[in-house]
Image 1 (cartoon, one colour):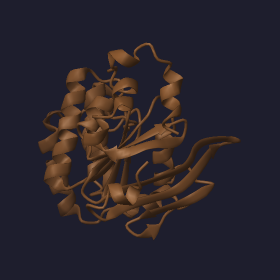
Image 2 (cartoon, rainbow, N blue to C red):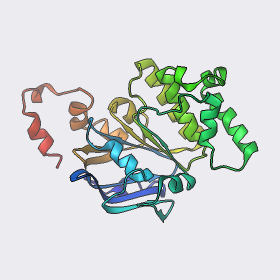
Image 3 (cartoon, helix red, strand yellow):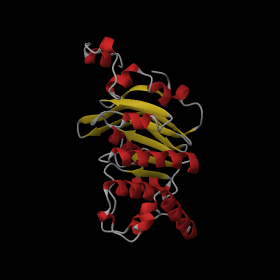
Image 4 (cartoon, rainbow, N blue to C red):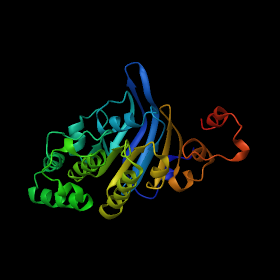
Length: 266
């Protein structure tokens, strides 16, 4: 595995994670995970269900405390800080499953994303910016979030995160439960937000094909450990990624034992 620093020397990292270990009771969920998120880039963490992707984001955002390792955000140590403190520092966490406030209107949900801000005029402008990227939210501004479709709730969750004007946005499985058409729409907007607004993002995703075509850098997580790091362009060319995550396989290895190839990753 090439070093994280060598892979991501293009920009200074806004987030630096080193050798973190996080447990659920006696069970180690992530073990010795290290990663960097360069400013202005999209970084993705790929892995199967249960690999530990969500645990990484919860540990970074303060929802879980690491037992070992260090996390720096904008040059400041944040491991073991409370989530509200980390959020006020400029980190927005869009959780798995969307988790909007169902009984609040779309407008009220967006305002919840700006709860720590005092610049009310700028908040109004940012709400209009969210509506520009997600016009369906403007059309249904006064509707309760409970009555939105899954894709619309995902848009609302991302919009709510944007309302905090984050330096870093953590996106947890934005494609979960969505149709292919909506997945493409959501990821197109993610790319636009990065390119047009300069939002730095850490994306965890099971849809490897979509994630690798969206992000700049990628980490592959297996059973709580990082097993591969590279640019997404190079990961798309990797035989391991093609076989295990993109469903492609060379004829010469179709009859080979899968565990043998997996073993070479470690």
